Amino acid sequence: MDKYDAIIIGSGPAGMGAAFNLRKQSDKLSILILDKTQYSTGGMRNDCKMNFTYPIGFPCEYWTKDEADKYLDMVIEFLNPTMLPKANIDIYQKRAERLGCSLLDIRQTHLGTDGGLQLIKKLLKKLDEQKVELGLDEEMLDIDAVNHTITTTRRTICYNEILIAPGRHGFLFLQKIMNSMNIPFVDNIVDIGFRIETRIEHYPIVNDYYDPKFYFPEKVRTFCTNSGNAHVVKERYITTRGDSWYSLNGHAYSAEAGHNNGLVNFAILKTVRLTAPLASGQVYAENLGLQASLLGGGKPIMQRVGDFRLGSRSKEDTFNNDLYDFEPSQQGCCPGDVSLVCPAKILRSIWSAMKNLDTIVPGILHPSTIMYYPEIKFYANKPTYLDANFKVAEGVHFAGDGAGTSRGITGAWASGIRASQGMLETL
Ligand SMILES: Cc1cc2nc3c(=O)[nH]c(=O)nc-3n(C[C@H](O)[C@H](O)[C@H](O)COP(=O)(O)OP(=O)(O)OC[C@H]3O[C@@H](n4cnc5c(N)ncnc54)[C@H](O)[C@@H]3O)c2cc1C
Image (tube, rainbow, N blue to C red; front, side, top):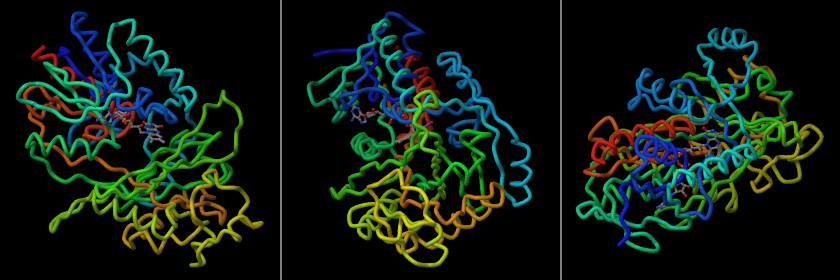
């Protein structure tokens, strides 16, 4: 049977952070990274904008500012990013504060989907040079934590330490692992809302600040802004019962790639935490996704702000008339009425935030602006971690977005490093 000192499940940023840190600490360890897809490095393949300021990407229940700063310094040292310039932040901040909102001043870089792929190539070369083994198209199925073995789609492998970092898409897989290992957990939050798309001239702040992070009352925030050569994309989810639905997301190519389509998109999400009587935040959010899919004929819904304000649904034939002056970058959505599918409390909070945003950055409520629904961010149920390094059992650590220890590339990378520090204690 194959045997490794350390196995890392998932080649996303959490897995990369862990692998490079383990190798940095010891050139003797045998390290294997497995990924179920045929290509590597998970969510770094999309847009690859990186935020380097706490609390962006760092859930506060696991990270203090000092801890995050310490690990962010390590991420910066490794990735050596060029931070993007910003302008006029104080003007937007003052406008936001007057409305009871805030704009965070975050250090950022943006590689774009093309630039991210270049970075991934470099990382893979480095892994190879440093003799870290990477197994693609090999999925972890199960774990026997007593005998320190895992079963994959190809074999059984023995480990001393394992890090499981399967990303947001892997939340059901993590749940299965927690159930099989009897790891206690509590329900996690879900973020539910819209992907907004408009012309850059209706959201010109992106010329001053690539990914502006606004916080509004009622737990609403903007998130993941993309502009220039920007596109709204669909992500397919399969429920526990095997039904499929789509969540929206967005990405952009780098400025160097050219082909500026003049559009910007960003998420505006409300954080929902369910309390007793509790079914499950994930199941609730899945059902919202299914409901949107039901009304959209198997597709997500899109509605122009102009139609939304008039209380009428968007229709195929009215969607692109003269007022509605740009084509949606995502053609696989159904023109409809978002208020028929989004719960009132979520819709009210988000619409109120959008009105505030339109006062801070006038233009976003132009009638042509598109509201795509739903955009949902899942996190696995929160395991009870046994220590500060995200250990869940002897020899087993979790990290990354799926495990709830991060919400973005840099946080995932940092949480991978932090988990690997714990793995090193026994290696
Ligand atoms: C369209 C899009 C755009 C985004 N843009 C940005 C952005 O600009 N900036 C930002 O900070 N974040 C962005 N994100 C989020 C970012 O991708 C995540 O925060 C980050 O990738 C999380 O890292 P991770 O290592 O936890 O998981 P992931 O990057 O998701 O990696 C997990 C890996 O585990 C593998 N895996 C899962 N289950 C198994 C299994 N059972 N066996 C083997 N392998 C498995 C998966 O195939 C995947 O490659 C974006 C996400 C999407 C979808």
